[in-house]
Image (cartoon, rainbow, N blue to C red; front, side, top):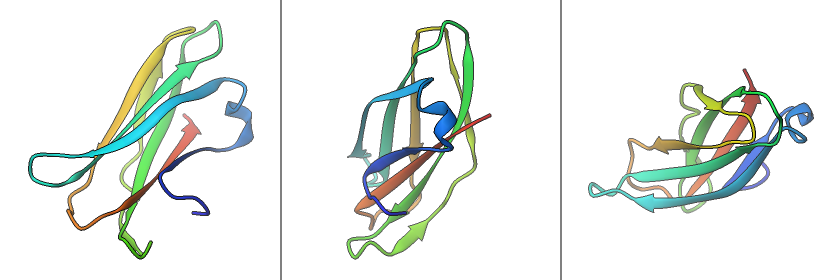
Length: 101
């Protein structure tokens, strides 16, 4: 990816339909990397998207993922949260992809 600790909505057709209201990471109790991404549906109809995450180390070298696509169901004008947790612990960066279902 070109950006780290970021969320990429691809392809551009979703840009007018889904907005990323926030994204962040935290360490779990066992020091895994947990990414949380909050999505808002900008349309007046329910929408389903898919999301997956890749993880990178301090030197920005790829370490894990991409994981399996997870389906996120967004109610009309609603908000939903996508979460992903790494297996590894020696990670520093993430990259989330969002695509149409």
